[in-house]
Image 1 (cartoon, rainbow, N blue to C red):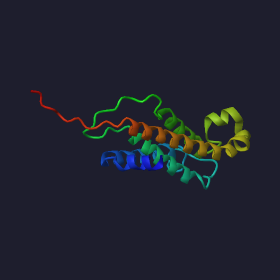
Image 2 (cartoon, rainbow, N blue to C red):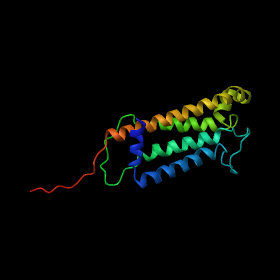
Image 3 (cartoon, one colour):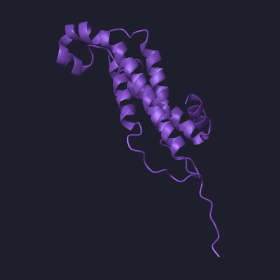
Length: 164
């Protein structure tokens, strides 16, 4: 299965790889700026960044980029019919989980309203590494679904034929 996925990735065009890179950078910025992994003047952070936050963000950004690039049409190929539940929901779930996993436990308004300051530190902060693992699993599962669907529904380029 892994070799089949690697073969699929090797067959990607430069267009898809550039899309994956752009999506990965976009993911780092989209999650990193509001969680203050990327320092900025707009958002603040009460609790210091954990040692595992950046590695989790980079892994999920790479997986997110690959998942997004799997939606980019290859030049000269006919679009394959849509595959039901082909990983889009799992990819979105992975992104949301990453945001909660790497964010400051007491800076998140939803967590703060639900648990309060002490509850966020006592209950939510210890769960964040689990959320990070679930995010990576969800994105890996989404990528697996997308690459499996692409391999199963591979459509060859259309070549015009002469009639008559």
